[in-house]
Amino acid sequence: MKRRFIVLSALSTALLVTACSDTPGDDTAATQTADTQASVADSGNGWSVPYTAWGDPDLSGKWPLEAVGGTPMQRPAQLGEKAYLTAAEYADALERAADSASLYQQELQGGRIGNGHWLERGPPLRQTSLIMEPANGRIPVMTELGLARAATMKSSWSEEIFDELSDFNPLDRCITRGLPASMIPFPYNNGVEIFQAPDYVAIRLELVHETRIIPLDNRPAPPEQIQHWMGEPRGHWDGDTLVIETANFNGLSAMVIVGPGNMPIPTSTALHLTERLTLTGPNTIEYEARIEDPEVITGPFKLAFPWTRSDDYEIFEYACHEDNTVVPNYIRATNPRFFTEQ
Image 1 (spheres, rainbow, N blue to C red):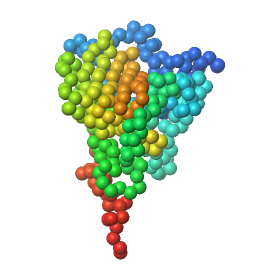
Image 2 (cartoon, rainbow, N blue to C red):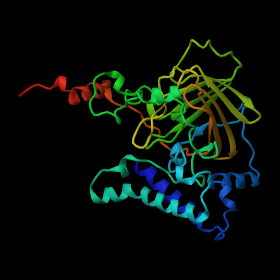
Image 3 (cartoon, rainbow, N blue to C red):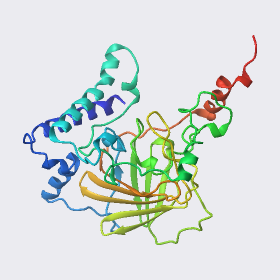
Image 4 (cartoon, rainbow, N blue to C red):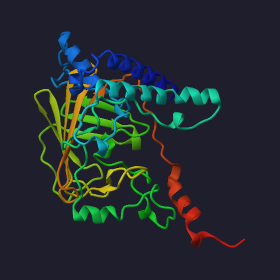
């Protein structure tokens, strides 16, 4: 983790210099992120899309999501429809991110372990949220069914006394983060690696050790009765853009992982994702995901943010908790029926 924080701190500093070099008072540049600006520059230098030996655009490599971890998924409500920070606001945000990235070294020098060792958030983007549609940058309000299901959702973050397995969510149980949550930055273990073969793309996720296998051979989708935690994907190329359509979800995972500051939002078997991955430079992908689930939310929303290549990123084993002992230990430690008089 030490190496990651040194890299992130350096990146924050570099972006801070770039932000501060903007003409004072000129916020027109706020319609592009620093990453997008860099990819445009790459294109101007004669860059062209690379292809695999069999002729597909070559997306292979490591694209850790921590590079955008300083940008919230949902826009703070007080920002309304303000999609981008001004130059001054962006400079302030980068300075705060650089301070955060230095916590690891501060803790080492102080002989202690805290959030500096655990959290791996990168610098923020110029955009104020990863959700870019609807205009307020937030997940649409839930339906009545969605609200009813959300009221019953539990996790290790939400409860104080645990009684049974249903008191824990799929991440607590080391099963999955689900979708779209797995494609959203987390406080740590944000590795994403793409592998390609003829008629297949595989997306390896560091957190909860999952790999999404995406066939590109025009096979039909399975019957709706076949349902998975991560759905059933089908991919195709739209020019040089990889398009992934995913359905057949089991509806048992959260749309956003329950935790501090997150309102629980369920999913249903009607969940449908349309993702688009487009190379915009030698080290940048523009990622978009349109999420719709009419059973639990009143409208669709779209994520849109850049991925940045980091070939020296190390993907570690996500061992979670060995033999699933944490779940029974939570129950034994908190539930009065396991207490005995001494």
